[in-house]
Length: 95
Image (cartoon, rainbow, N blue to C red; front, top):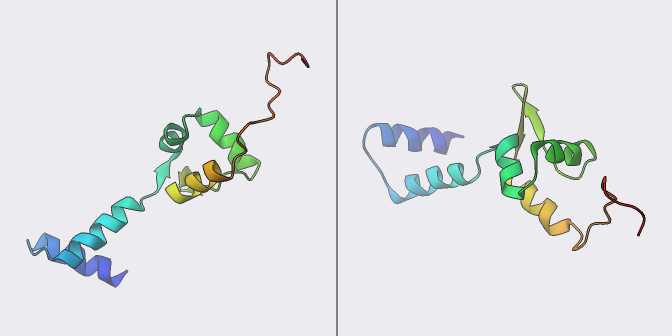
């Protein structure tokens, strides 16, 4: 936490070192995603993402009454998903 504060203080004063740039870039890369952003990453609806969270298949947290997701958790969900889903949707007739 301290390194982030020092990096931001330095940026506010116009100072920019390579180490500070790396810290700021790492924080931006690790930012939390909203429900809508998570759905866009996975190319799913927000409703479907909420269902996966409810079933424990995607990790997410409610922060300030809003869902937040880590990109790494979305990547893990994708990597662990089966190559073919056994899905019985509304048009499924048991064929």
